[in-house]
Length: 319
Length: 262
Image (cartoon, rainbow over all chains, first blue to last red):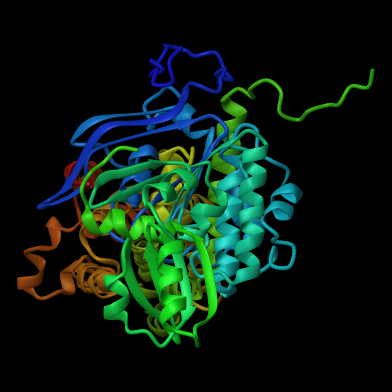
């Protein structure tokens, strides 16, 4: 079976649906979605395969949340099709195997975290035990607190708990670590990796490049509703040919731009950041001209460079 | 060979037990939520009680102590439904919370039913409070049958005003909610004879009274105690049913149109 096979909906599918590594767990097929004059998604396609963590990466307004809402069956496309677990995403059976973490501005404040989880658990036929959900989302200290009294990071953890409490096979996380401190963010990343290790499929949207870099098997870069690029983090970084040079030098930026194979020069506080195809040549020239040069670092291009290059062009290109 | 019992084995069927549990928990938590939201619970429970203490108990020597029990009970159910459902749903929609619930396997009907039942429960609490005040301080005598009938009418009355609350939730932005609801329901209540029999109202107000659903509900409630205007109660039930359908129809149209745009 080819990797792009689409599961057709059967009348009463045997459950659980057997998922091999190559079948698409969820699929957006050439969807277009417009809100009035704005085109949120333009002929956009996306496939999720079992067990992978896919990061949908893009700036604000790129269409990430629209893509997630389509996959959750909250909205329907103007054209194209959406299939989740072989079914229409609005199918109640499909929803029992899906968990979601959305960007909600407020959650009902007059229920305790434990009560919220208890309620959400009841929606699912085979939920995780309450104690397990509390453990996974690190809610021990806040389980009995009213939701309205939680801090931003605590709210995100509680929402994550709601997303996973039903033991879903497919999890959607829309900007999951927004507002979290470093510790909570790392802890949540560990939990997302644990989900993947348990064989679950995760789609996460983010504009944090580090998050996509650290978590995703596959990154899908989107901007202005169009698919720009898709591939592993390494593959995307390789699209940006060249490496980064960082050093503290007295040499002028204008001069540095004239050096052979230099693509870009940026100021980074006291240092200068140079993107060059042949960094050895550039460094040789700089060392010859500036004896006071220090703090030299040469590294592979960061995901950030690839991302900026991709999104600034906004020319649709497939990996 | 050691066997490890795995909790997730075959599918638990989506059967009656599963749905029953959802309904039970959804209703329980909805009620708890409403109770804990002091702005809601105190005003919805407090106003009818306060008004009865002000106007009802001071009128033990005439019919008002008895009249105001059913009429303020109607006020209770109308405000519970309009605020509980109208504001409740409008708020949850504005916050994005409703979307999260929709993305989950929660049956939509469970959500609405839970809210309606919780509002109806609040209304019954109000009825109980008013009856107690009436019997103790108001010097009113009522039969068990009258009390039961009033409870039944109030429960039935939760349906048309739930429908109205739904329409309000769809039309009115959450921030304007309380203002709009108060602007609608207070004059409506007054013109329907909640504070004094319709006959006492000025003529120009009495003209619009038959168009108000609150009037029809009040008439049915007052009829139990013998204070309704002459005429068959059937027309009032029909009016309420028609109003409910009208509200539901309008809500449906608006909802599907907004979904189409979404």
